[in-house]
Length: 494
Ligand SMILES: [Zn+2]
Image (cartoon, rainbow, N blue to C red):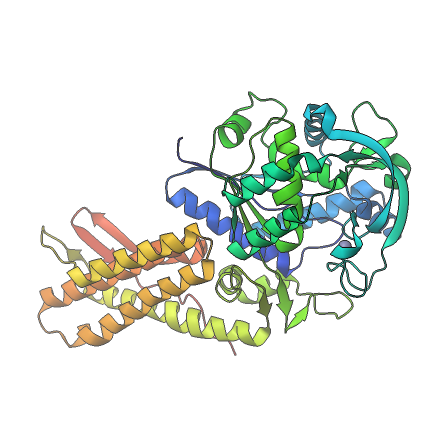
């Protein structure tokens, strides 16, 4: 197949404003999308908002405003965050849009008849997750692990069910054989364990009375609203134009693309790696190829919660430290496969140590030296040292491997090794002590080449900084390289 990539974030509930955890996922997905573009893939990157939840109706009721107004306001806040974080999305889909509703209904209608049935049902329901849980899935206190402290409700109602049990064997194989590749392995194991415990059919509709007329109606069934997860997951294809199978985006990025990558948090892996696959299979559609599952962010060692009062406002952090400092912290300090912590102190350490000193300092040194010598004429001479060339190639190879495995923090650690190598090269060669002007230019040319590559490798992570560096390095013509002295990239903070 052609080189194509489709990258998605999950679509957050819009019953509240975004927090730092959302920023983590946006930034991670953005690195993947930008990296795929650098590698020459035709790339499509999607984000959006999940607006059909009953929670939105409840939140709007509390504020005394129409639900439409609440979801609009919060969807705007998420869109604004994407912009402030410099996330290179191609589209932002809102699931309250008509085109999405039509697509979700079409997906329902395409589902095999034997996979959907109606039954009276009584179960333990978490309002927060809008999902039913079995007793053995709850924590020791008998609560949902995503929403501890909240009592589950016993709810009885007549719902449609999806016959997930029909897909037990197929799902096991798909995950085991990496037909859907789940990264990291630990999360793949968890999904497999969940499947192997035995899959139970899940309810996929709610009575209209309980959803208060909000959400997507079940086709030909006026009394039932589609379960919010059922419709939300469909955003990954409705945004591309489904149910129009001839829609260009849908064809290019879903039907004829073997690099469909979902980025998601560990709390929603069951929906993405189990339910979603079965829904697609039943409707005769291709499944995603990869899912990268990230962990959660704690703040000063504690779970983010409104009650604790430790919700970090990403807008505030960006306005204080700049977008690339926030991107860097999330990508470097939070281990990609696990939970990580946010604290002001660690933020400042990373900032001063890695950005102000490491990257900022190296950039300033090299560009200052470059500006001092002025134009560097190549004139057919081989100026680049073998050791420098090899080091750059090694780092690039390492970073590619790590980025293909979504190990963002490890990839950055490799990149900083190249910066240290560059620092070592300056200290070693002491260009300011070199008397021969040609030799001096040769050494500085090597340094500029290192910096130029640092900036290139940095692009998916810190696009703004990368550009700030490269705009000071330019070729006057094929033979002549000039550098300009830059502004300070990262002023030290106290
Ligand atoms: Zn819950």
